[in-house]
Length: 203
Image (cartoon, rainbow, N blue to C red; front, side, top):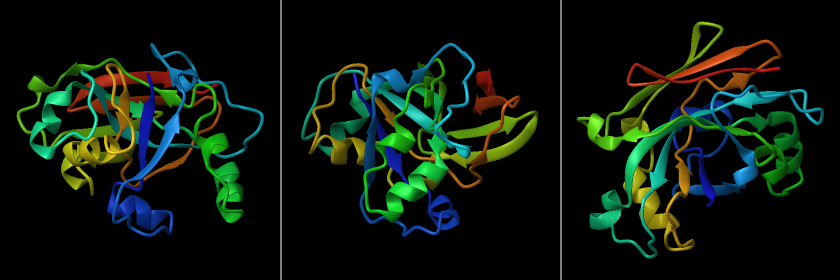
């Protein structure tokens, strides 16, 4: 399985990073070893002093497809969860300044805490799914799928031009504004339409 991540998919997040708002999806990958499951704690890595949280809707692919047409895109997923794209921002900035790829700052071990998945049929409005992140009980991020620059169906169409989508692949759809650093001792809780999906600590 592969983890396909979308960068700068919310206008205000692109702006808070002083980045251009993309005209086509910005894509990077994480390996399976980046997954952090079952609310296990995240251990702060030695190579960074500025790990940031980025809370995202995550869609699980349910069948194989390539060159998928827009009218069929919605049939390629039936479950939705939440993930956090943990980013070594200090390392990412160094890599970006040198024009180098981001993988070291984005794809390191356990950099993708992932929740359980729930059926998309639980959501009456697929284009208006809300989610939020609390750190130590304080709301830090709030997002809604209606504010994504590229919808999940648009993303599936675009991604499948380049990569064959396979059963179990995950698409992290980008984060809204409000990203920031985590520190040792923090408790992160993420909610999808009010349902708690993630609850883990930084150690």
